[in-house]
Length: 614
Picture 1 (cartoon, rainbow, N blue to C red):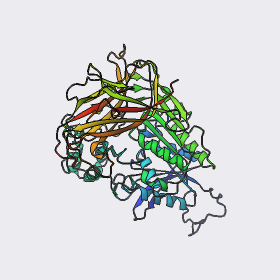
Picture 2: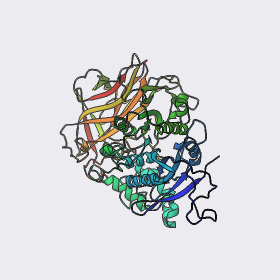
Picture 3: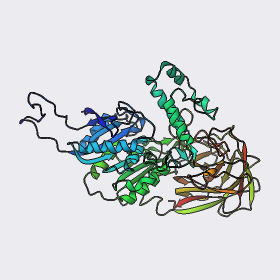
Picture 4: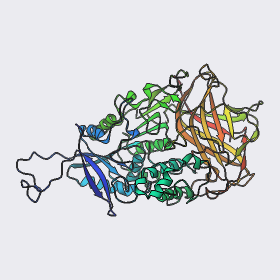
């Protein structure tokens, strides 16, 4: 039987009331001839229900909406909020779903990422005061709902446990809003999508303008400016987009609990948490850093990392690559995702929570047949692994040197080649196109996942991409952990970006005559942030500088015959905004420039984390 929800408006400290559905709480007493004016129950009434723990989810996407990320099992329908409530109630919880400020039926004005710390704190305080709550409030949720949890935890909200799925803003200049200082343009596609969803609140003229926007065409004619953007008819969304885009220094305005979990971790409750992420999710680095910090605070915390895109934990593929049926969460963990969460929380609600000997469960990609599946995907395969820590305790750094062979191909070798230089073009009018990767909310402009990156290019004059490869491997190589690229360059402009992509390069085969270059991880660093995000340091044209780019961790098995490949570029668009080269505003007129990459010494390296291969 599907449980009914009671709708409540919970008051916040500023008087704004936020709407929530409460499943499983006893109905509030009302005045009847039997109870009298006080609402006291009649003498024949059943004894009151004992107080229970509360499970809270805060969302900007509609508390009664069913989202794709709610899917709980491979091939089964996505459960509704009420379906999920039935499972949580059976495990002894009261379940609460709340619309964030200014969304759904909640009052106030929604500004992305704002007010979540204080609103989360006030909501939990109200819940803990209710007679049907036993004083314990747990939080759960995917993506923005995970951001809302870290925001609330960062102001000392008394939580009993957390499940952080595909989100949580560890550092806004590293993941989620910016990466290496470059702005993530999923903020623009996200804003456009939600501006369209709110057209009912707009004038007829605004509605017509928004519905006529061709967002892909707008991306082809950047830079945008306020009032001259696809969001001009939705001023609140345009304002949030440009306000974050224009704040290029990591100052006090960024250092709030709403945006920066790293700086507020000491306020987090010392309770167990599950941190769940995936290799093709934008929040890989946030997930791993949150897990490390939360496990330090409570050793019963757990980490799960799958091969999925953002929130797609019951799929078996990412982009054009198939990982096999075991990749789906429910196949790996023996329960659908909702039931698994409920069971973990129910066990947590019966203290003491005991640490697991292997709290880390991660999907090691690779080991498949390499053939083309009936759906046209690469069968890459993979295996779930367990570890006591992340990176796995058996991991060790493997450093490879970037160089140039006599035939002008880029090499990755254990020893450096002779010193050399190669040019890399940085042309804002022709940026290097995003092809999959850790992308979410990018449709219809970009899509996340693993895709063929094409053939490696020889290192000619003014390349737009530079490829460096190992020789074909003579034995399997497995990596699990961080990825670091260090390169020394010069530039003709006052600023530049270095974008990196790590690739598992398959050899040619009957199914893949040109081979298949599968992207594993990618990142970017804006050179003006090379000394930190609290200030920008312009480049001096022609003067050498060294960049160290940290790409998101990954776990992958490279089979014998495959190659590790590293691609370098000066852009990755539209995932990131294109650097105008001025060290000024992001909407400055761009300055075409050239980077010179220095090779052949210890400052031109790729370092990965090697683990023993089976």
